Amino acid sequence: MNRRIRIVSIVSFFIGTALIFAASYFELFFPSKNAFYLGILGDTLLAGIKSLGLAVITSTLINILKNWMESTETLVNNGFINRLTKCEMKDLKSKIESELYFRDNNHNKDNFYNFFEQELSSLLNDCYYKVYKTKIECKVCENYISKTIRKKFEIVNPSKKEAVVKIPFGAEMQRVDNVDIDRLYIIKKFMVDSDDFTKEINDSLVIKENCDECSDAYCIDVHTSWDVKVKKIQVIDMIIETIVPLSDVCFSNKITKPCKEYNLIFILNDPSYQLSWHSFGFMGNHKDMLIEEPMDNGLEIGFKDWILPGDGVVISINKSEKKNV
Image 1 (cartoon, helix red, strand yellow):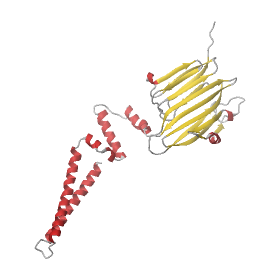
Image 2 (cartoon, helix red, strand yellow; image 1 turned 90 degrees about the horizontal axis):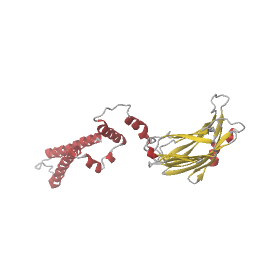
Image 3 (cartoon, one colour; image 1 turned 45 degrees about the horizontal axis):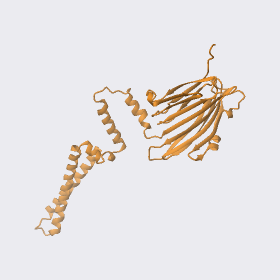
């Protein structure tokens, strides 16, 4: 902003000076008694040029003084911020925050402000989840555990430009005896608003077994994704069925974008098992923002305020201990 003001001021000063000198030049070579006397119209034209030059120089000086002496409040109210470029606004923001927060404090690169500035502020203009709801119905069978996972969430785009959001599907899974790997992870439903893409997403689903090459028990890789165009808001609705061995007792659910309202219900059909859980979220230390409601056959857990990518819950299924009578 200051650079533009300086450039405009210098250019205006030279234009005004040039106009005054041009008028004086013609007066010198064409005085009133000269044979080439310009007449009343000529005198008027020269006087006008002089006046224009003086006006340009005077208005430039007034504007410079006005910008120096005008209060910040008046500048903002007159649209000063709207005239700044993005880089200039960031520079102004940095200077204001430096004066506001660190004038009397020690400031180093390891404090929370720098983490927020670098890691969190980049999310401010990205898409987020307005609501993210998950319901898991868990059934313990003879040699495996089956889960029906229903997810419904709203993606909001706060910017004016259309955004493309990648919806990931996938898991690292264990082999289950007498169960074909194609049955371990099935997408039963995938809808974007009212459009059904269940067939298309299943056609792109890749289930790859690496058990001969990998010593890890989680040797089956399941993955695919779907790109969703978001102008303002999109509602995603899906149902996934999974099968895991009885030894795979943990279930985790993490979000991939900032979320304003998160809710998960986990239902277990077998009373011989009990649940334990752990929630982790940016607002998790505020107990009034955390929902933890045990039910007879399950659990409801969630956050009533913002959480960040990577936040979520972990639920473990454990065999109930028999009490000695």
